[in-house]
Image (cartoon, rainbow, N blue to C red; front, side, top):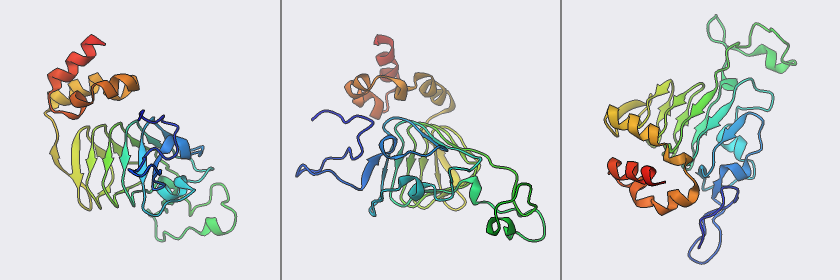
Length: 216
């Protein structure tokens, strides 16, 4: 059967021909002014919802100052949450209590925080079951986030992170190889080319993948 369009709501077809409602291409289901998502990034949740924006980023509101940006071909497992900056309370003073949210969010209220960093996710990032991404995190391309990890700060391209707080367990490739992979940017190739060279993209031979680009 043909590979589904990135605008297909439920792209996973089961052996009996039914579509799995637990899996969605995010581009087809997200309509939120503060979320940007690339082609073919998908989420899977065993308690499917009609409101995927609220499921994945429950503190990101249409009026929020920050954005959640997710690249192409990301893989988001069951229970993953993006805790964006609007979830924050001010905590640099004596109390963290958000008095202002209960009487109209008055502008300039001293109980409200003033910094709202975007959360940025690269391309081809795999989030394991139950991972949480904290406000303002920057996660590079090719990263693997372990199940249950709590990720904050900046994660370098092609790192494997795990734990709470998440730490780099190891790098998937050497520094020079990471630079070559980022230069290739296979996620920006036409989908037909990507599918034709699935073996090179999912294999470990970087020379073979560079040879593909040189021919196309």
